[in-house]
Amino acid sequence: MRSFSGWAPQHTPMVALPFLEGILIPRIVRFLELDVALWNLLTGYPATTTTFRDYLLKNRVDSSLTQNQSAHLIGVSVDTIRSWEKGRFTPTRGHEMKIRELFMRHQTL
Image (tube, rainbow, N blue to C red; front, side, top):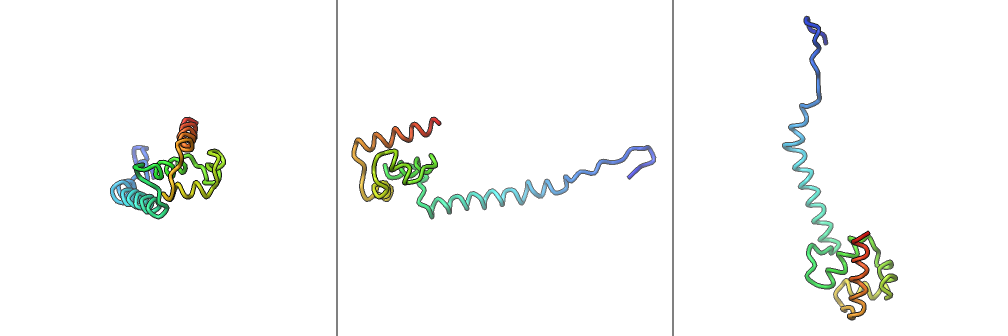
């Protein structure tokens, strides 16, 4: 479009931005937060680590390790890892130290 003075107005798609900022983006954020909270609830992912079971599960998941991988690195069977994560049994002091060392190494990577 050309005006008489030779200046053409700039057309920018800024009309949708207030709508996105005011209405749509907060709804998306709430949906994603709800989705993450629901996922954590369904998978048993602990929000805080009040027990060693929570510590083991949270750090294993945060380190992107499978139960097989963590069992191999600690030197126990997968069934043992499962039992610890479900709270059926607690690790010995020696295994507890190996677990803490394992996650300290993975946090520094």
